[in-house]
Image (cartoon, rainbow, N blue to C red; front, side, top):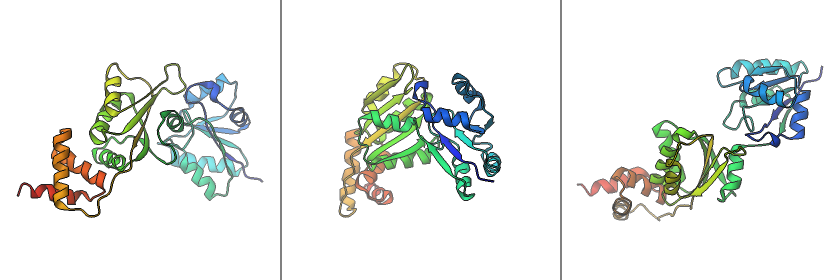
Amino acid sequence: MSLGRLYVVATPIGNLEDISPRALRVLREADLIAAEDTRHSARLLEHFGIQARLVSYHDHNEADRAAMLIAALRSGESVALITDAGTPCIADPGYRAVRAAHDAGIPVVAVPGPSAALAALSVSGLPTDSFSFHGFFPRKRKQAEALLDAMRAGGTHLFFESPNRLVATLEALEKAVGEASCCVARELTKVFEEVVPGSPACLVEHFSAAPVRGECVVVVYAPPTREVPAPDPDLLRELVRAAMRRDGLSRRDAIRRVAAEFRVPRNAVYAAARDEDA
């Protein structure tokens, strides 16, 4: 008996016209469709007149469902993996099933299409030759600070954010990388789509004016940081003072910024700033 194929199928992130003819054909021909939310996906399939055997596949049942999908593929069935919107496995469940299929020698086929992250990057007007995608902005403080440190080091970064947390995250960006260029893409491909470029401060003002609705992608670009030949304590101390005076930062935030901008270990900057109090 020949093995089935696992199809990783991208679906629209908003506008239903974005689904490809190939994606429709694969979904119609699949013996089984694994969906993040079967109720949500059932509406999509019904819209296109697709009769399908649906099973749920999400973060809470991924391990068990992956084994079930592999069994179906081994028996020769074709399986289509979809998410609620966009491309599966991109900050969404799915990679365990894909990895298990590879391990079992089962062909895995990409059926490409919409991706909110790449769509936002393409309309941001920011450098795209190299970029880092971070999924959803971290909720835990230490993880959020680590990501902000990475942004201070420069380059293009993008992440998802929920509407109710957007302004607070933009405020954190303003404090961490105030000179950065940003773009917020909201409700991409939908009726109330909005693409807003600007500095973190301008974006805070814009999105504070009214309640934010819909899914958001934030793109951030900061120029590559400068380097100093050696962590000279006197220079580091003066840089910390300047950041505190110029930008009204606390000593802690000034130390973090200087460490990131000049690629100096944070403890070296802390030691230099502490010497001032001795």
